[in-house]
Amino acid sequence: MDTATHTLANRIALIVCLAMAALAFGSLAPVAAARPMVITGATAAEERTVDWAMRRFRVGGLEGLPPLEVVLHGSRTPCDGYLGLYLAGRIDLCTEGLLEPYARKFALHEMAHAWTDANLPDEVLDRFLRIRGIATWNDQRLPWRERGAEQAAEIITWGLGEGELTPVLPHPTADRELAGLFELLTGRAPITPAAPG
View 1 (cartoon, rainbow, N blue to C red):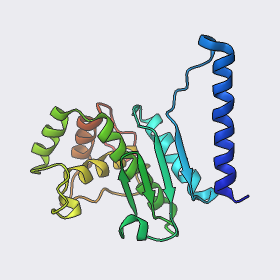
View 2: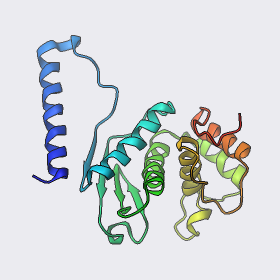
View 3: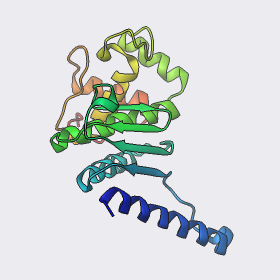
């Protein structure tokens, strides 16, 4: 059995056990804190990267990630030439061969898309677009760096990261400004060591 199949089998077994416990103990069974996430196609190292990203969301206090299917690929073809894609609960990561800080960044970035889709109120989205001088949230005709959705994901990634990588934005942005934007988007202070003290 390969690593991905073994991991999936273990996760399914855990879910079945928890469901049986809930049936057996009714309201005495503990409520699961995390939403389900299924990882497929991952090596052990890639699975640790995805788990690390999920932990950073928890440590940062960003609840509300939707259920996710995370699929890892050995080429960039499934990601349309990018290193990751998020669409409707599915994250495709094409990060094989990347150094760990970059693989972690792209896992965080795609999860940030899922989080903003599930949690960002319209008034916050509108304020963010005004501050950043962006006309629309995700106009595919604009270059990647100029899309509001991508800038928000980069800022959330920065705020949850470990300070190793700077966000890819259309113009340099000071850490103090990044911290303010992170707080606007999430309602929380960033946990990155790069945030001003």
